[in-house]
Length: 181
Image (cartoon, rainbow, N blue to C red; front, top):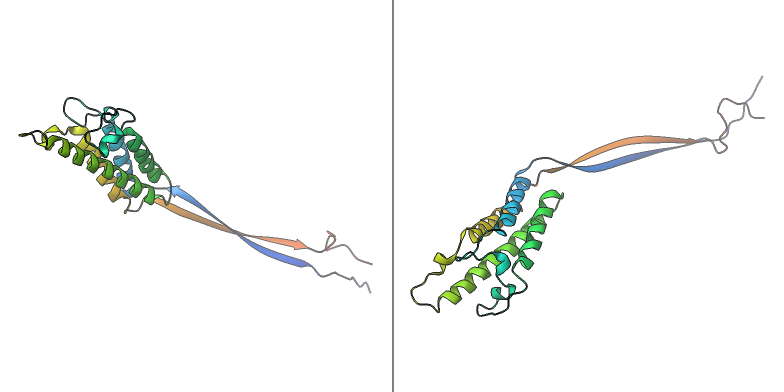
């Protein structure tokens, strides 16, 4: 009678889970893209009558309507806001970036309008609303669209996959069918 001795075999099961983000078209993503595109376009448009573009409006004007400084322009604030809106649009779970970018743009737009009204109040018979041009309105609307997009689902969905691996170890790497003495 042939008796075979066997050593204990250890078996280990391991579950491997993977998660990946897949872009799908969602309302937050669409509105975020529209807000970003609108803000970028507004940077090339006139914000004030007599063809004054954001590159010609000093950043200091946002805080002092009587400033005489020319550099840097308000693009110093608008470009990072456009980047935040754009990053918040294309990255998963980054709706907070869209909200921050939109709020920053709203602050720039409101400060610009306030300082322009302060400057125009010194001139009798003028209305600050008559001095605003299309670029200002495009930036304001883009900021509002970007803000709304931050509260809507962006469209990124998480895809999960899992598999189970089994690892068998008999301690010596010996084939199970070999007789042991």
